[in-house]
Length: 315
Image (tube, rainbow, N blue to C red; front, side, top):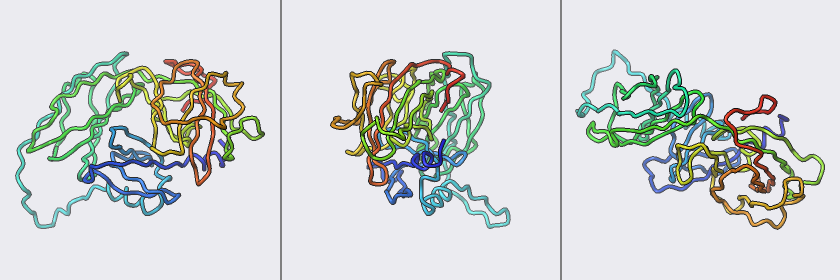
């Protein structure tokens, strides 16, 4: 992918929340403010949680240096000095195990990676469990709000939020219906020069397979990701939906009735930030703002498949 395209893949995520105790304020490279709950960091990517329960994962490099340091400090685990005087902590009742009911719509994976992130301390811990497990234990499940993320190779990502009060977990049991990861194949054409015209030279075009909540792909900088779920749900499903990364009046999509090849411009379209299901044959235009300029694209859903074709780039 050209360097210019990579640079354009840096976007902002704006979110509003009244849960101030869970929010941290960050700033991106364009000086825009991000308010979100930090979930976890892995391989230089940051996962955050928005008020409506949607989570987003994006490269840490989209944040400015000061905010990157703030995130690193938030996830730093303090190692106690063994020679330091011991202080007695307030007593807490023993915490319960989190009971699990695991289902898979395919062959069970070899293992499941489970990450517990404390929303108050910003610390996280990851354990590996067997797919036949009926519970997951942590050595020290403190009182407070926690997010549990479940990852299994070949299956769609899932997460839950739990509350621990005086050692009691709520909910005490989680039912996970793991769905095989699927792919939506889309054809795209994107004008990188802030114009709605798709017939001019130097239009970024291609066709690729997209899995859920991927980053660094052609649609990422247009302000949305694809999400694998069921209608009306944030998890459990085999269908794909547009998952908006921020809320702004300068972004949105417009479903079109024309064929992909017939759309020469997005001028005059009425864009809106709707949660649209990505069904085979759907054609739409979209716009977003980047560095005070508008970006325009057009997409066609070619197919939704269980396995991507070998000749396509996969995101």
